[in-house]
Every structure is written in C-alpha cells, then in structure tokens.
Length: 356
Image (cartoon, rainbow, N blue to C red; front, side, top):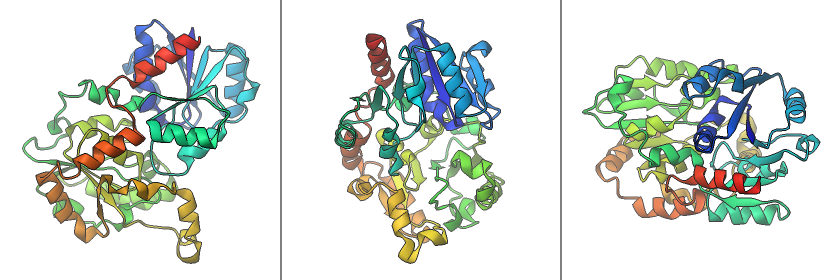
C-alpha cells in the first residue's frame, strides 16, 4: 500500500503530517509530490519529519502530476485543494480531499466540485451542508487532523523563549490572512502599543512570498525589528507551535480563528480590513461572494474589533478573562471542527485501510 500526498503549497503540510505519522504506525509507505515553485524549504521540513529523500518527488505542474499518478498508481492520492482531471487516474487509485483549511471563505465548499472518492470533513454541520450541495459524493466526518499534535500534548514543552521572547509576558499571536487582510490597517507602532506583551507574527505564506503583497511584507518586517516581536519565516509553515505558546489570537476571517478557538483559547476577530477598489461600494458583492455566506452565523465565537483603536482594550480584557467566550467556542468548535480528541488522523487512516 502506498499513499501519495499532493503538495501544491507549503501550507498543506500541517494538515498532511499528522496523517503521515499515523500511516507510519501501520507501515504504510508515503510519498510527497512537490510542485515547481513551492518553497525550497519543503524537502528539509519533510526529511526532518522522517520522510526519506527518495519518497519526495517533484513535478512542474498538474499535467506532470497526473502523468506521475497514472504511471505509479498509488493506492491513495490525497489532495488539499481543487484538482483537475482526477478522472484520468487508474481505477487502482482512490482519491481523498483533506482540505488545507477550515476557514469562512466560500471555496471551503466549492472545492468539492472536484469529485473524489471521499472528502474527510471537520464536524457535523459542514458534513451535512456538503452532502446537500454534492449529494452524489462521499463525505466522512473525522474531525480536523491538523490539531492532533496540539491536543495530544506533542507541543507542550514549547515556551515563548524558544522564539527569543519573554516567558514572563503573555503572548499575542497575530495571524492575518493575505486577503482581505487587516495588516495594512494596523499602526506602525503596533509593537510599542502592546509592549507589555510578546507578539508572534504568523502571516499567510502569500504575504511574505508574493510581490502583490509587498506592502504587507514591509510592515511585518518593520515590526520584526522590535524586541518583543517574532516574525515566523515562510518555512515555519505550521502555526500549531505558535498557538501552543500563545495566550490570545488576533486574526481576520480565517481558518486560524476556528483552530485557536478549538484549543479553548480567546480569539479577537478584526473587522477592519483593507479591501481593493474592486471590492468596495457597489462592487462589494464580490467580497460577499468570496466569503462563506454563513460567516456571521458563527461570528460570536470571538470578540470583534471594529477598529485598530479598540484592539488594545479588547486584548487586555480577553487575556484577563479568557473564559468569557468559552461556551461559544465549545458550541462552534463542535459544528465546524468536530470532535477535538487528537484522533482525527486515526479516523482518516482507519477509513483508508478499511476501504483498501
């Protein structure tokens, strides 16, 4: 039995690696297929995680990937996003979608327009909704594999000092998405405004790697010069270690909000976003189309900051009273993330082994 992981982007790995670790327990061979243009750091990350170098393959594009999968006929192909031409694969290869995120963008659902043998889903609410949208496809509620290491205590020894920060200070994790983002709406004095805190900056990979977002990168790098700030480089793709050492999260409408809330830690949701001209005024429908229309059904999982000026007081309150939104976190975690017991990867692997 051989499992292939399709790695179009660096940020797929945190979702894939817990599954790979569970497959290792069953002696199943895993191969990671990397695309031209993805971070050059990926091979070293995989090798450090115990993936043999001969189990890391490179392709240039979709066409090359399809050709590879047709030739080698893996038992399972796991993808993290939409993928064309899966129908061209051998009937010996089963396909599974393990989405790279659980955020509130509409693409969470539309990615299932790519037909796979199964999609592993996070929670009963989204499983039911996907079944309604795609009644001919198979959806299995397994929970969110990415969180397994944190739930299982694998990261409990980490401290802020591991990132050059002060263990005696509370730690803020600021993890904005690339678009629509709050980064440009933050003050340049952000580190000084929150100098009594450690600040870990964990932006989306695109904010540091794509020229379109060079203004975001410039501001992030400026903040990183302050002694109370750690800017995670792109190769540190896994946000879980930073979640483990942080006391409160500041983010936009992103998967990170729900991941942090699933760890029963307080979240501050920024409503002040930098929108392109094409998403403003009478064109605001484009922004609405980009986001899941159920977004504000679960918006009270966090306290909302409507302006940067409100942020300091809100963060102080959430750090002082972290239990304030605990009931909402529990409610929405069950719906959107599913059971958080550290066994999501185990359920995914069990299903694949049974079907095989």
